[in-house]
Image 1 (cartoon, rainbow, N blue to C red):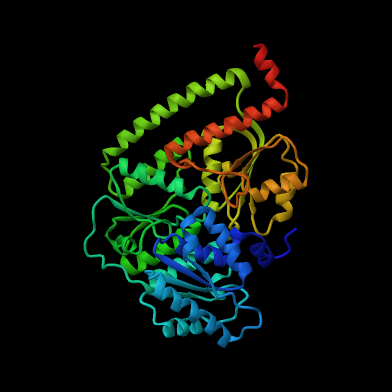
Image 2: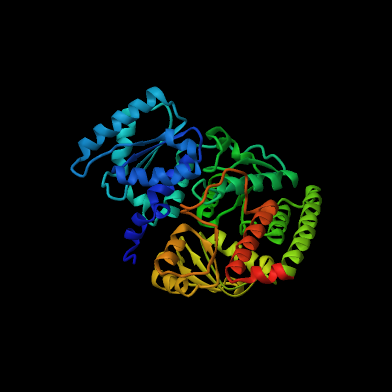
Amino acid sequence: MVTSLSTYMCKEGNSCGLTGASTFFAGIPDAVMVLNSSLWCYFSAHEYIEKQCPTARMRFFCSQRNKDAVFSGTEQYLLHILQSIKQTVQPSVVLLANSCTDSTRNEDLLQIAKQADMNCPVICLDRHDLEGGFWAGYQAAAKAYFREVPLQLRTAIKPRTVNLLGCSVGYYNAVHDLQELRRMLTLAGYEVIACPGAGSTMQEITNMTQAQLNIVVHDELGRGLAELLEEQYDMPYVSLLPPYGIQGSLSWLKAIDYYLSGGSNGLKALQQEADCLEQKHSIMNKEQQNIWGTIWFDSIFIAAPASAAFAISQAVRGEWMNTKKIITVLQNGVPFKQSYPEYIGIVLDGYKDQQKIEQHLAGLRGGLLMASSREKAILHQKAVKGVAYQHISSPVYDEMILKHRPFMGLQGTSHMIAGLWNQYIQGQERLGFIKKAMVT
């Protein structure tokens, strides 16, 4: 049982502010991350990010400071690392960040960076910048980057161009999903200039002011940055639910077309692709229904960051399957009480509602869990049987993905529907329905 927010963050790697900040810079291929932390914090962040972004391992460094190191010791550790980076790596930008247990102030970090005389910008974050967990750390890192690194002046805007904000290599399946978003936008006739923190180089990020519109993919990561860019560079933005499901994907594309003044000929091609997919899915669904019946789960438990959790809940209710009850857990927490659409079901705070979460999981027998390995582990601890399972969020410890497999967008819909049907069929087999199917 998690007793405090700080304990929860240290217990769960994807909830740590230091990990969130490091994730943003890990998504810049020519950036280097220097963590002023213990080896525990370093390896926790490193292990989490390496699973999503294997190339980041060569760009991660740690001061390895011990608990007795005072500021002079910290200065010595960090200067040695920064000088080594300067001579051997030659990055375009460096993140210098404290862990939540280190009291070195931001001003002290800036002084150390100044002494190192690096050939690139050094973005410094102290522990106060990282309070609030993974999502606060990501936002703090993104905002600090754009405050310190100037972009091109917004003098020339290229028509039908966009940036994608709030994407992160730290989110589950992010690389595959981003490829699908780029594919759909390209077919729709748009050019994606940059995805800061999700694969774009520093030069590509510098040029992002040429874009006509910023699209916030994950609101809990990107809205604050979108507001900052609007304030600094007069760049308009739109924040939409991520595109899950066929109708969700088409709605996402149509909304973007509306904000870009319409007239995209590419939407016709994507509509045709969607029509073909719906026809294919209809045929396959009928075939499986003749054998196994209509796909149905009494309860569906969804746990993910808010944007993904809401969008998947919408797709579940509107397109994918029937269910009596949906429980939606927001891993980044519920910022304030508000009313939600009916399809969201019961909404729980991933930080504060641990006891309720465990109670709902304990009663999930015969249901569907769409979540991370964390929630799956609770099922095992409570010996809950007969639960179908689909990964949709991190951390994930029991799966290997070696091929392109998006969950978002039109192509992602096929992967998701196939996965859900396969889980349902396996559950029916466990109940003995395989005998009935063989007889008929």
